Length: 228
Ligand code: ZN
Image 1 (cartoon, rainbow, N blue to C red):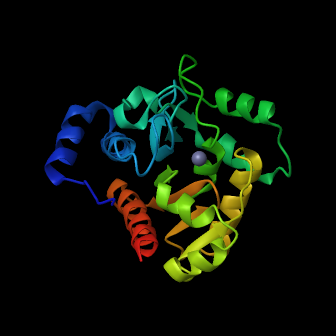
Image 2 (image 1 turned 30 degrees about the horizontal axis):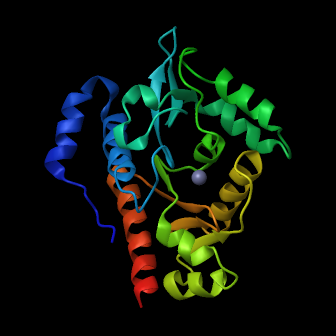
């Protein structure tokens, strides 16, 4: 069974260790590792997380950025460099498009990197960019898959969550999924998370702890239902 492994002393230690990165990214590293080390939430290399923050350009101007998991790193051992920064504004503008090929999306995301040597940001980068919350956590939790990998998924989801989560059918990760998740959130702004059938869960929050503990809470409810 999943449980919150948040610990105030550990969180403070991450803030000290990664003080140069800013508190948001330091705590993003902390809760990303908590998620990545729990095999009930993600398998090795799976899942992705992000935090919105600010950075300075070469002229010293402040700009909004998204730190999002890059390819090739495992959440359980992620370092700040494994969460490369992309400029938020040009990525959010892509919301206006109706279609975007995978190649054009990769080009746009790589073009928004602050560091040209950074790893490729997650294929789910636009999804993280389109959601307004500071912290976004994405897992492939076993209990969510167990509920949704069956024809009666909607009935089970309603029994577990009522209308507290938004639910989407399976959609190929990339631009269509990013658009669908943003629209689902906007249609249901009070939701505690978004369940993607046969794929996983998105939660979000104003703080690292809030987003992480929403993941734990929603997965815990699914586990308890499955036990019954
Ligand atoms: Zn995923």
